[in-house]
Image (tube, rainbow, N blue to C red; front, side):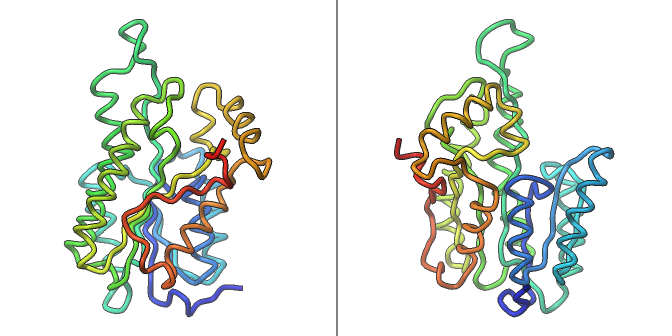
Length: 265
């Protein structure tokens, strides 16, 4: 049953919300009455399945806006912000910005020049998966779209400190994402905004499957986990919901590990 009063007149803006952690988060927050705005980037042949998921969210009794746009293009960012601001009107506001963009280069640092990671690959990955968090956050702040008690939440991984094959650019972006989040936690606090990261355990998503050796990563993660399973998207969505509640008002500027204990081994 949807609790429409818990987040009355409040919205979640989810960057990368058509699958994986972002989609699971949209579903969870909608169950508790939060309206949803999703920015995603997908091919036309993927849209039938995605639109079915979006319709399912609307059936929970909340409003949903979706934009198949590039979240790192300034003109597309402006288009989304303008449309969402119009939808908010005078009464609604953004309760939470969720950064779930998973668009990075997975290349080795050595080997033939044409196949290895380039400077432009690193910069593109860092912008998409790291610094874009600040771009969106600052725009929402400038447009006065946040509520007086808002959240900014982004997803990081154990790759922020461990080495995985061909993960160099993504690893750099995760470290930058966490650093930016800590700084924002201090500078955005006077505006009633808490900023945190969630470090998810190895989770079976489409993004994970793009990483070389992902099946082996899942096997190892399950072996390491004291609960004998890998992390599921709904585990992360549950954590986002908890951080949105008023009981989490004093949690700010940290990275919360949500992996069932996987990181302990």
